[in-house]
Length: 264
Ligand SMILES: [Zn+2]
Image: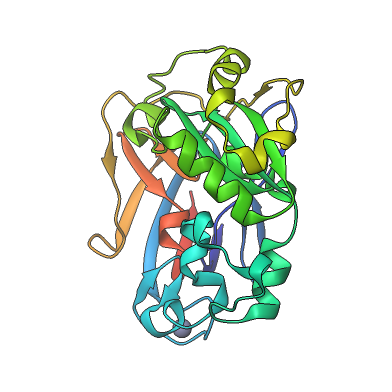
């Protein structure tokens, strides 16, 4: 089988294990069905996810010019505490920012390697946790806008990590922890403005990824440097494809890359 298309992050759904889908213009590929098969990935060209032009991808699937101008790549996306729509202040496009920021957001704990704190729109749960490769996660607060979530995250960051050690995540060097207990210990550091939104009763969500065998040592595939790769798919975790020889491929990290995918 041969497929061709521009990479965007894999879509997911939770059944007993996470189901992953790669979506191309003309094809919809259930990646779980490719486990155990030999795949080849051939990088053909760039295609910016915003302007569609064949320009080098800078970040998040966008070319340099788009990344620096479109509202969906504003600084508040990565740093939610910089959100200003609740003050009626524009960053790049106030209408867009209002739609994105003035909706329920959740600050959560996710355990993908170590426990980290993060922010997402409520509608992105559990998608966000799956994308991070978290095997367990729990909500801390649910607040009415992105700004409140951002300042809560900033306050909690000094007491718990906000980074994932993706090597540990991909080799499954992980522990099961009692996230409800960690949440309870962090409660005292939630800023005043967000304290009324504390969620004391939500239970941990457990996530199981489709992995036949975890790699012991990993090497990352960067299509910008190595435009062709072939290997046997052994698992999928987060947004990574895990191959038999220890190669790991971050699909999300290659958004905007047009590839040819062959299944042998
Ligand atoms: Zn562009």
